[in-house]
Length: 458
Image (cartoon, rainbow, N blue to C red; front, side, top):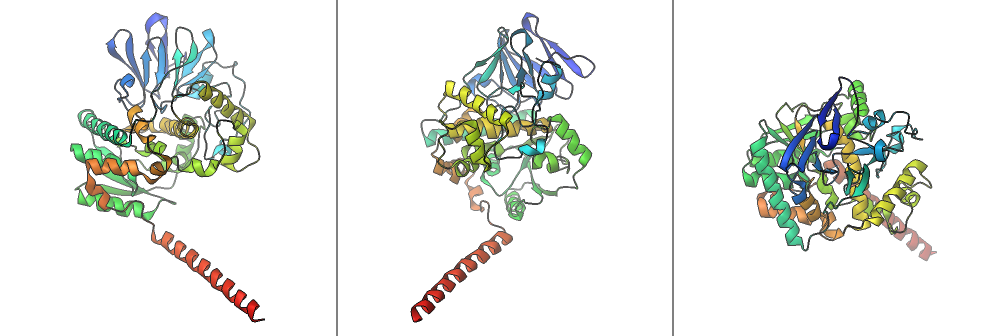
């Protein structure tokens, strides 16, 4: 609901005199739903069904008047500033700022590179404007009251492991069937040696959706990714491409950085987009992203947080523990305190660790990258951006989450032959490194024994 002007803006009339205004870089569509009071507002790539049932995927906001909600897990970031008649809602922090110039105080951190940390924050890092806030996945904008209110997003553990397995398998197959109907071009699945992309591949194979596989090769990426992906693709008759990044284009990197308002310049924005990693995509094609399944692992947080009691810890304490520093930027640690106050006031079945991962890591990081995806010619779809799938992923206990037991169970149910191939096998370099470490440890033990024997001989 950004009130802009000029040729770069498109305006769509809404009920009660409201006008939806959006920048031309982010296409907007309004779908009539089941009646005049139900509408789906779709910003960016259009792929959704009714979010009230939990069946939907992609980037969208639901307009169920008078409530405006982002998609269930917040991959479409909605930013807001002001209150009452001065409330501004936009799909991008820069747009929100443009709509309230002169009213938003400057952010007190200007260097976006300061914020490359394992944890991401609300507001998104380096937005430069502390008064611009991103709505959480369980917030909505009450358009009549011009205020931010609580809205149940429905993400909570399921009653059993079996229920989670069945729900994920069912929804992935629904996703594949809808992709078959709605994607006019080629469906591409970035395939690695891991479990997440293989879980999506199992649904595609089970439903007969035609698709091709792609594996990116760049510094830090295990060589085994391409090897295993090639073996899987050959066995199932899939066309496979292994693509290397080209030399990153600084101008293109700056374009992406400007599009996301310096929100989070990680490898994707500094190398993958500028390195033309998605050059295989054309208009009408679809790239499927499975990385959001990581909500079911939370693998980086338990180690980083240790025994820290999140329910009692301050924002500064959380920042210090995760980033291994004594203190953090006040603006961002204060934002963490704001988040804790909101989450504590609206408990919804998620434990603190799952809520931290969902709100602070997954959706803030993904949301910044999603704005980059909007500049691609193809659509980018997220089968895991789904209430039932995310509810299923957080159902198992932490040990099963980190081992990927649930993904394996889904694959077993849909296409068990995919489990015949190794999962994230170590590369030759890793094996040699482990072997060197083993010999060093053995040499130290032998040296210790010899030292003890000599001491006894004296």
